[in-house]
Amino acid sequence: MQNNREQWSSKILFLFAAIGSAVGLGNIWRFPYIMGEYGGAVFLFVYMFFILTICVIPLICELSIGKYTKKENVGAYAIVNPKLKFFGWINVITATVISSFYFVVGGWIIHYIYINFINHKLENHSDYFLSFVALPFLPYILTLVFLTACVFFVYRGVNKGIELGNKIMMPTFLLILIVLAIVSISLPNGHKGLEFMFKPDMSKISFEMILAALGQSFFTLSIGAGCLLVYGSYMKEKENIVKNAYLIIFADTIFALLAGIMIFPAVFSFGLKSDSGAGLVFITLPKIFAQMPYGSFLAILFFILLLFAALTSAISLAEVQTAAYIENFHLSRKKAAGLVFVIIAILALPVSLSFGFLSNVKIFSKSFFDLFDFITSNILMPLNSIIICIIFGWFVKIKKVLIFKNEYIYKLFSVLVKYIVPLVLTILMICGLLK
Ligand code: TRP
Image (cartoon, rainbow, N blue to C red; front, side, top):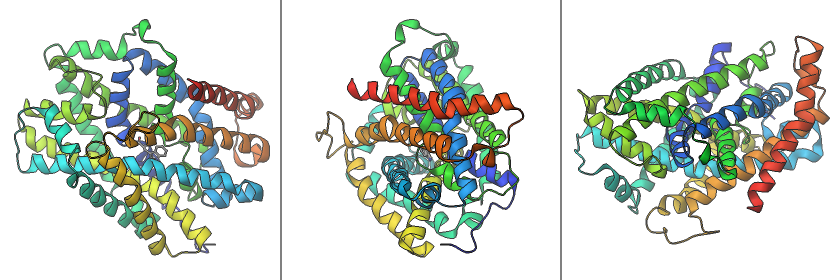
């Protein structure tokens, strides 16, 4: 057990760290490509619906249980009831599996910083991306570089490590996203991208799309892997969880929408395909930059900020694992961070190779990359969220942890957390698995 448990230095720093965890590759890389694959506006609306009505509940639960128990996942569940420890570990495993592909994409970003830095002019952005990710060594080595940076911050701890930089980098990132979004809209035919994003085409509704929107909502808010539980455990007593939860959602949604507005007008303007998958951002953005004055400078700046946004999310994933190893295996922070490094380095290898050397290896007809993404977004994250809602609703005295303005809001919340959200999530998850 840790005696001097760290706390966030101030309210605003907690919020920055939680937003830092939420805003990341999920917003800039995953959101546009999933939305592109599932047909644009209808996806966006379903996604927004999930975020505002369903996902906010497990988000509040995670923060509350963390804040209330002041423990990492395993210890927190054990305090609620010693029999529940196992579920804490499932959160840790989820964070580990997400890390295995998240860090690979982190490595790609480093490469895009480098090629802009040496001013490497690309002939065909799509071919370039595909041949880069198929290389056997370079992408993996860059994954390890990204992992090293992340583990370094985690090793330094909450105050010195995680808070550092959040303050300056996130606002700068927001600014540059706004500039890029404006440039993208003003490209010829840019309005078609906006139509794709905001004008629903009802023929695109499908059950698979609804599941993808649910998975994306979890992913983007960092729910269902215990990240917010751990961050909540460093919260100070007097902070208001519900208000913070909505601020996190608000900030995260702004980043995702801006990313969409930055990507889709450009996709339509350049006649690219909106459903080109995981490479979408890496193929489209360099094309936008190539058309802009000071393009390579802006590209470097953009990818550095994206790298930072990815790092702040990666840190939260690594912190879930580190905190669990510290408290349950009685390791020093340094050793625990080292263990996290080794585990992610091993798991990331098949993921990185699944774009080239191992591209023919399919499990349930999915590559390693798709498989890990699928298992986490469609199974583990919803499952963890169902569990945390049930635990919070049935095992914790809600009023001890959360303050409600009036009795109606309390009643609404408890019905949602005890019955509705677990039920809806269970139905969606099972239907998704039976398909
Ligand atoms: N939310 C982050 C992003 O959008 C990724 C992330 C961090 C995450 N922690 C998580 C996703 C926990 C799921 C669960 O990039």
